[in-house]
Image (cartoon, rainbow, N blue to C red):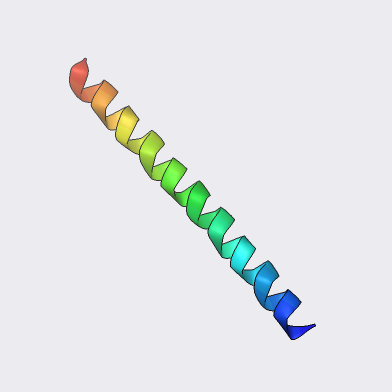
Length: 37
């Protein structure tokens, strides 16, 4: 049972990390677009 909770926690961290990376990537694109204008 403890292992299952740990696994859920790990999955949660991993998915939030992906979302964070995506957000950073989108911000980077926005900055590039603004500089190009």
